[in-house]
Length: 298
Ligand code: FPP
Ligand code: MG
Image 1 (cartoon, rainbow, N blue to C red):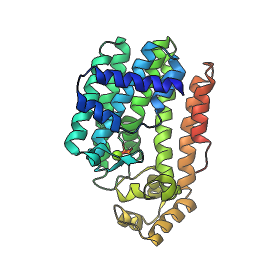
Image 2: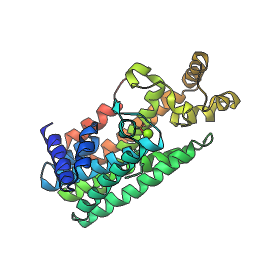
Image 3: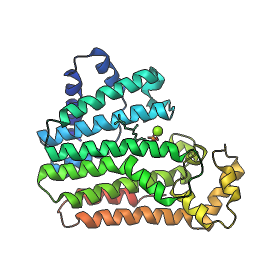
């Protein structure tokens, strides 16, 4: 996609404007991801100077949040490459995150006021979402509402703000696109949480069933917990290194209680609702993005 290269060039020129060699060196070390948020913005607002700028701002904020998240999570890889905290140290990761984050806000302050409001508000939600996520791993969380609130803030809010802001730039019905973006984000996170259980470590690029070991009680675990007569065994496995027998037991219970299939259904329902919101907007690619996400092998 040619226009994603335009976004990368814009990010580079923003960092060049900072006149700092170290920042440029670090930018080259960042692994680029799927650029989901940019794809969404460009599919909604088309390719023009403002939309490319919005993409660059959102990608810089997203990258900054991951630089900080990798320090918080003590992660040594990001997108299959060594993370900045692993290549350099925690300080460098935090400081470079701050450069990306503040330069993004400088540019955002010069953009459409409503766009600036929506994006900056989403970053507050994102930061609160990260705190909720960390706090929810302190002890077994059995509240589905807390899980939903956390994934909305941590993952869906910036995707929602991206879609909404793109609609504002293009003069489209912003609420329809906001709902689409929110549900895309929620479904994306739920599917990520489901794949952690259904896929092997080779496909995932990290150990399978790692979420529960790391203290994350994701949607399949929440539904399972709710449905188990005797909850003590599941609770006793929380945050433990799982043996082969223990992970098989969890998977079997998820099958027999339908916790797994009902989690997939929930993600699909969010996807269908997203498609409904924009189905009369004459934008086939939005429907394709959502369908590709939910119509896959689990
Ligand atoms: C990844 O979660 C983390 C996020 C999507 C948000 C992190 C947000 C912050 C650190 C606060 C915002 C800070 C700034 C500077 C804008 P994950 O750990 O579940 O996913 P992963 O497996 O990709 O690490
Ligand atoms: Mg992380």
